[in-house]
Length: 357
Image (cartoon, rainbow, N blue to C red; front, side, top):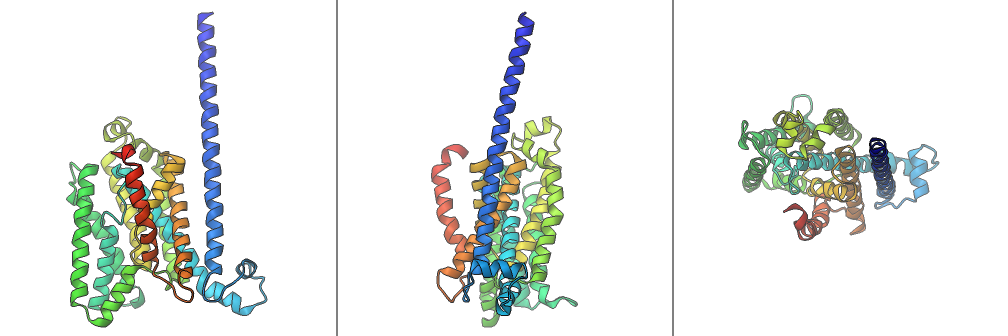
């Protein structure tokens, strides 16, 4: 009887745990659904906002090719739709890369922006502008190509400066900070020696802007995101195990060093391509993972998709704000994300200090 009673108790406890887990996953599902709905609303709002105000009906009919107004169709498809979709793709890339960076380094302040990868891309773009670097068959993409190249260089430098054989999350963070200051200093040096025309281009690029987006640039960003996603999802369980700490992760059979190398490569691709086409955009990779973590927890199966969704939502909202702050003018998107990110960053340090430190 005792054995039968113990078995019943175990089955009852198992059933209770399964019920609680199902409730938790249902809650996460509804939160993700709400975030996706907010993202869709922000996207439509972004397309409708601009010097020529469009109604929601005009936007939807133009997108689905049912509008009789030729001017609305041209505005939506040639100008606003590429910008709005680029905001989603870049925001998703930066949010996802920030979530990955915080996971592999187990540091809430880590992101591709704070660890110098974006600074490396910014230096590469500035170098191409000042020196006049060009590609034989794609001169218009020379700045983007150089930015991408230096994003990879900075990512490799962070890992190797952190120590190939004995790399820990702490040493990698310190190495990232060193790389950040190095590339910021080099970019400042380029600005000092640049001609007035080149200086103006460099400053505008470093501010970050979506206004030069087009369908070909959007395709490049979307393609990099599509290539990286399967590799990230393949390692989602290993990334969840990594949150337990390096020692426990290794005990579970996870090759921690190789996992970090793979994720660093994916982060460099996501960040490099995004920054290469739209310029330096900060705080998305820092803020989006914290929102995802507060709402959905650390389970990487929901955490990483939420990072991408909230990153896209934040940049889409910043795109809207950049157009409504001063009617008739468009503020650089990098300024708007910093204005939003800095207060959140201060709030995070103050309210979550007990949780992280």
